[in-house]
Length: 124
Image (cartoon, rainbow, N blue to C red; front, side, top):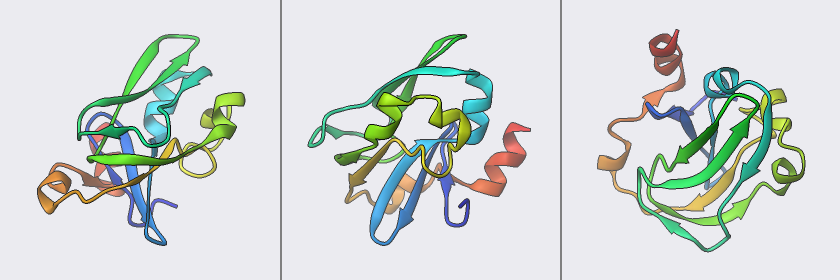
């Protein structure tokens, strides 16, 4: 699933698939957090600028703010991970996406995002 995935330095990913922009947490971030026990997601229709906090994830270790990798409006949230936050530990790059957004972000917003393979090299 990492094909075409772009990652931020703060460990969020964005994947464009079938015209949808899917945002989630990288496998590395989930691994660092440990067992995830709670996920708070924004409301559909909320708008965020790149770098703004849009979600919170709590694990047995700590609570972490999740930042928007690009500006956009929340189009859909993943209800499954609200009721089953442990899905994030099981499949962070697949079923456990966080939100889908509508975006008209320009190229400048993508400049600091890395291809997944480059991101993995940087964090290991």
